[in-house]
Length: 126
Image (cartoon, one colour):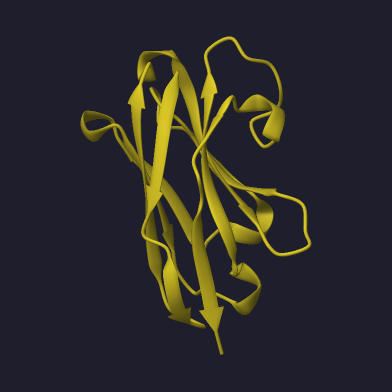
């Protein structure tokens, strides 16, 4: 089992920044990918970014490239999502997810991730 706890969400004005954190615990040695997804009201949960836990390679959704940065601190078992230039359409619940070694699926697909956090709300106001 892997437990994930997100933090750092909140209310921010358009153009502002937030940094989300996701602390992982449990069987973290089995984790290969750590990703961020988001879900706006009435919409499907969508991929935001992911990072290879060991190598540090990153991959972003096209709409977030250049604005969001995913990073990790292996010593703290924590993944971060730095969000700059926030837009109204970034308003959503943001979820952290862990993909295990040997799991199938594309890195931007929900199926690739076995464990999910409870989510943290990000609200962007005008």
